[in-house]
Image (cartoon, rainbow, N blue to C red; front, side):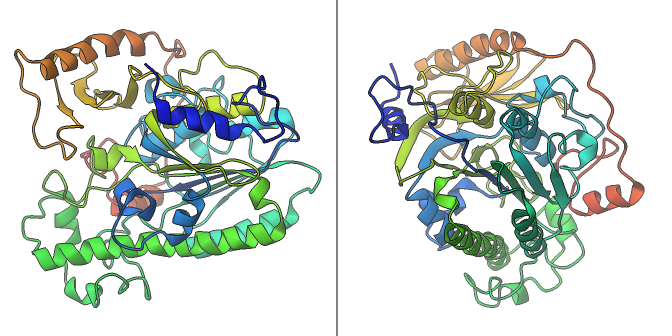
Length: 455
């Protein structure tokens, strides 16, 4: 049985003058501008267009109102490095091989920018240094690939690059924004957003956290955190979301004025979410393998007049590249396992998230979610329809839920083992400098010589 709401998305891609037999997953005419925005650490349930009570995302809400909004979209990992490599290659972690700090992308696996080069795209990428550095292969195919620290600097770089781009070529604009992510632990507040955003949702939130022990709260235990302090932490996180949204709103208005934005294919998503103490005893870890970590916002605005829809059904970041290949009539790639976002998906579809470095895998099918080790029979899971907060593990033994979970475990392994992957170990990335490693450790990350919890 097919997911009915997705059928609406198929119809929306057809221009009004298009013949009924036209392929609804193809874009007609000249290649459009493509904008891909990744807001690092943005939780799906902290945006207005998914029902959050705070006014964190007015600009994205307006964009969502004229776009396809995917209700059940998932990242492939709750780590910036792995997730973005899947997003930009269309491959799962065990395929692209970039799942440790010193792995680089296989040379035979193209990036999105390299694929778009087939159509003559001029590609511009803007990223926060660290996990999206050129040493991993992210810069491949980009004509401009430039680092920034905060959204203010990104704004300057993007404006200059758009002004200097060759007018005769279609362009691809990739933007990675890091301002929602926690800052260096022990160096100011964890979510150190400035005014007016710091006080936007809880007055004097910064004052409540004076002397806050961020290192302990993120790495060891947050048991000492008082309810009022936690409220302030969440308010500052939400303030960071609103800050990024305010900048995006300004950019969208400028781009509309420039006359190209409404003809562009625009995608907005997040690489993963954030813990905020929903599960576990620390703020670190970005939520691990739980829904607050892996279920992400995903907006796709199609070129031309607004054609909004809410699309049900399981979707994955690995679906983005197949979508663009199909929509732009690029060379098909049978190595990709994703579906296009503009076609129907089976209710029995399997969606995967993986951490090969720790041997963990998460699989979804329908309302059921499976946690397992990739090399063992041990597994457990949840029925997200009955238990969306993931509080009650499905107990082993008889019963329909356990049989469904057992079937999911049985089916997941052969599917993932059948994926394409190179027959050799991934290339080694140049090791980050000591200074770069220190900067990432201050954010809560590790390099294999300490716990991976914060990745």
